[in-house]
Length: 246
Image (cartoon, one colour):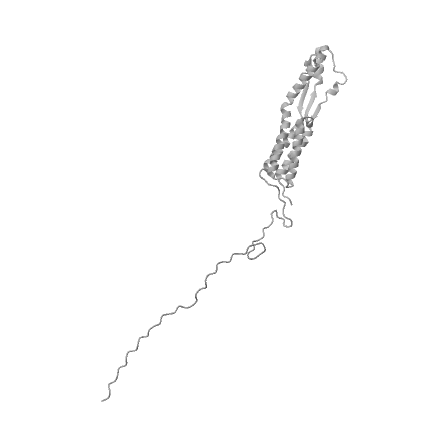
């Protein structure tokens, strides 16, 4: 059974969140029709409150992340992170390489979403300024100031922005867990163990194994008993001689 790496699973979840968040709503644009009709009435005396078609402008407009380059960047980054994480789970990519992919992909995805968060107000202001500039001559002919566009537009963040950013954070967490780890090694079949058992060393003349060295032979011990020196026996004293008979 293949050993799973929790960091790779968390990384895959982060990549999926980035990809899904990028196709969700990032911005919601609303037009305050009441403020617009009040401004027209104040400047011209014309009441547009019951005009046909104004009710449709009251509906908010949702903008998906992939409508802009920022969301497309987050989508591609999320897919790459997800694919690399799946490869790491399968053992085809080492943990260290997967962690680098997680950091780079998450950084790109978070950058795209954060850029929209930080610049959406500036983009809205630029859009209103462009509209006022282009419509000013036409509005002047009917006695309407371009200032009617002030304070009637509002823009809010969509859930997709936060999902994409959260996915990037989760991918980074998985990458941290994968740092310095190699690829998941499959276990050996039939043993139920993740590492194959090493064969015991074979001494002697087995196949492929050198023969054990022969210990040096000691010289045989000398078992001959030592020869004792000869013992000299003292000579017997001479016997006394009897005198001859008379």
